[in-house]
Amino acid sequence: MDIKTLKSFISVASHQSFSGAARDLNTVQPAISRHIAMLEEELGVMLFIRNSRQVKITNAGEQLLHDAKQIIALADNAKSQVKRAQQGQIGELNIAHLSSACLTFMADLVRSYSQQYPDVHVTLFEMTATEQIEAFKDNRIDVGFSRPLPSGIIDEFNSSDIYIDKLVAVVGQHHSLAEYSQIELGQLQQQKLIIFNRDEAVGLFDDTIILCKQAGFSANIISQPKHMQTLLTEVAAGLGVAIAPYCIRKLFSQGCHFLPFTDAHKAT
Image (cartoon, rainbow, N blue to C red; front, top):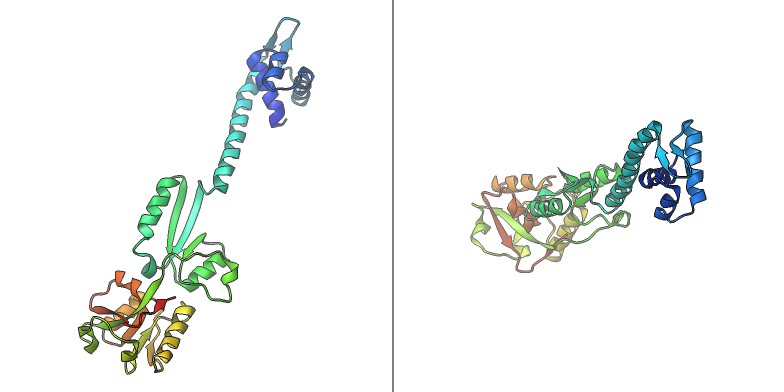
């Protein structure tokens, strides 16, 4: 019993005619007759009573007709669902994101996507860059919003830039630099620096160190927090001065001042 045979059976029942079914299915009558004979042999029942004037469905045929219509509908729905799944219109979408980098757009982005694809269940996970890489390896997430990938694994993923951020100095409200509106990077030469943990953003950390050297000093790093919110808390507590992406201003940053560099630098 297959889909093609069931369609022949449904058509015969609908038209009460083998020739009518053949025209409906754009085939020849012997093929229709063969399909019905195969069904009757497989099921061990008579599906139609036929004579020279009419084709009448039997009680057994009526039962098969009911089930066959459901089977065809399920098959058609399966085809449709498979196509929709391939096109990303149904199913589940697991998204990982860095809260510090995505606060300004994530809610609107997910809302817009959900309106366009209401049958896709979206789940958000807040993860560091390192956690996202591990989650990708374990197939726990489908999309990640993160910082640029380390050069060693960048070829393993498809990636696109969402926006380019800039580095700023973050100082406490009572710090001597808080009175400035912008500073040169070299003004941080004597400062205790708080830099985001290298394991979580290799490019960001390495670029920061290089920029400090280009400004004429070696960074005096006293802390490498793994979360941007911790970095801001340490700055607000007066533990040091941070060099960080400007996007983190959207986190809880009371007690912190963000100072652009006159020699602007891109955050990676």
